[in-house]
Image 1 (tube, rainbow, N blue to C red):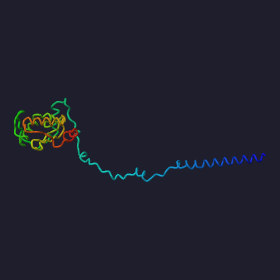
Image 2 (cartoon, helix red, strand yellow):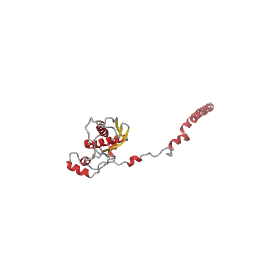
Image 3 (cartoon, rainbow, N blue to C red):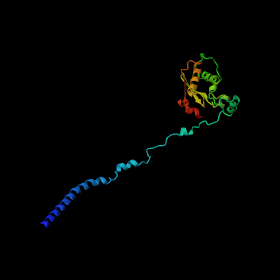
Image 4 (cartoon, rainbow, N blue to C red):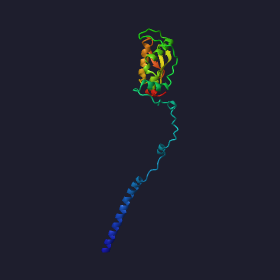
Length: 206
């Protein structure tokens, strides 16, 4: 009786182990793929590859050629003699298409032609000369700017601003435009040949 009972228990234990093994096998088979890293696909590896073939050099040659004014100037509170001494070492702004000044009061009715514009512009350089670098005293404190006639486009006068101004360059243009239009009323507009000439960057380049 004892032998039969032990045999029965042994058979039961073996059956239980077999059932457990049978039940665990699919679980291990199901979980095993999640532990194996998938090989990288060809599409994902392309994200890390670049031969820079789509890039081109930036055209910054104009910026590289630009020179900025780093000279030392006199201070505003310095004497006129010192300002003139410093300024005399600097060349005044060149004047393109210079002419004899035509000095007339505001409200005059001068004719609109190139010769008259050149003459009135020449007088303008003298009468509002504190804005420009035509005098040694002004150049001594860093005012090296000048104004040139470029062309006439119908009733529009086109100018060029160059050098360094203390005033905003838009203010300089407005003052010159007002001077011309008050003496040649047929002038409809006064502008610059290049809008960049009205920028702060242009004020530091020479």
